[in-house]
Amino acid sequence: MGTKQVKLRTKRYFSDEFKKALVKEYEKDKFSVQELSRLHQIDRHILYGWIHKLSAYNKSRVMVVEISESSTRKLKDMEQRIKELERNVGQKQIKIEYLEKMIDLASEKHDIDIKKNFDTPQSSGSGTIGTE
Image (tube, rainbow, N blue to C red; front, side, top):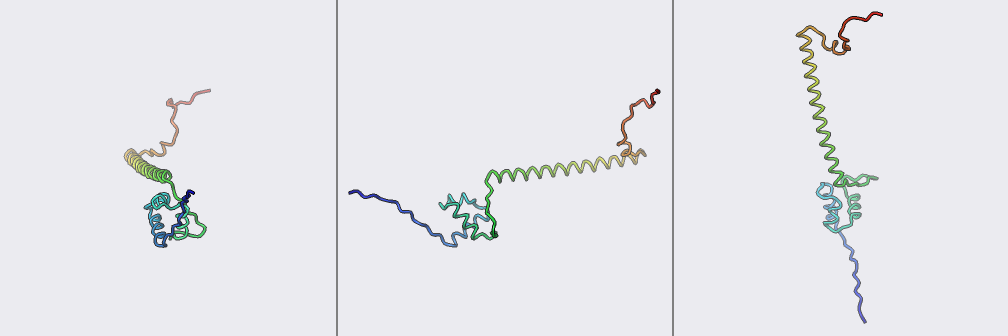
């Protein structure tokens, strides 16, 4: 008669210190939940439970949501784009202030209100009004 070998599942127990250490690594952004799961061969749902239970940032009725790598990259790209746009707006504002100062200086030098004349429409050039 042959014997059949059955692989028994062993239940692993983790100390509170180990759980807290993993949660701290997660909170310090050293590892993502997925990375910790692969590294320690622990199901990610168990890790999320530990984070929910042991996290210093945990509040009641708050779900832990991890930003994926692509979302993180997209967020960094958007932040970089915002910085570029803010820099462009600042440069345009400096240019506007410079041009306004030049208009003021030209107005003083030539005794002409350039700003007032700037808003008036151009004339047709003949200066005469046609007769009926």
